[in-house]
Image (cartoon, rainbow, N blue to C red; front, side, top):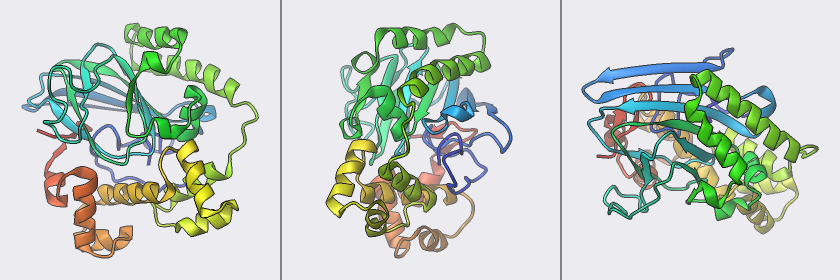
Length: 320
């Protein structure tokens, strides 16, 4: 499920803030904003989740603001996701490492370090390194929203982190950079609503949902437990054409996306006290061993080690 919780019938999230900025707890039903502050020996951080305007929710899953300092750790592990993230840093403070491990791409020139950049859909976890003082906003785009904004086939962005100057025009970059100077989170989010409404609704005027977009939503609603052959039958596409359309419009093949969604549904249950065997059964895994293999694949950790890596109050998934 996205930060907004407004993607059309996806399963509700657990109450606890989940790992990374990939799985935040959205505002409660009827509310548009949720704000959490944390202060402990781990550090200080404030996390603010906000839904976009209703007219934008086909294109933007949600906004997430963050402001943190004095952390006792430097690395986080970001989980796989079908959403595309625009990172608007208020300072040069985040580096996306090249490899999946904390020690890969860790040299002075390793990875991507820019104030504004885009991370495509991911079918693997990725480590990020953050400076001791860091603040900014994440904009979580749906695949159709990212495709309209960027004008690119989504497979070109999959598992990539790309600097904003390579993807966005100068005027948009300038407007995004000005967010840091706004009076507070509400003004920043309202500015984003206005800016993205101008960009997306104008470009998408008359753009009806494609069979691929509807199939993507079906995978999300089922938490990855719909057969690809059934998706192909519903769209009228051949199996090969369905894969081609998913790569172009979503960024991930339908089978891969289903596996990612199934894993994310397991993540939502892993820290609720539910037995691993029950989680495996509920999420469509053959057994607990299958569940553990998928955690090793998509999180780089066993379920128990993953649970111990939680940071409180939406702080993310610690990687060091």
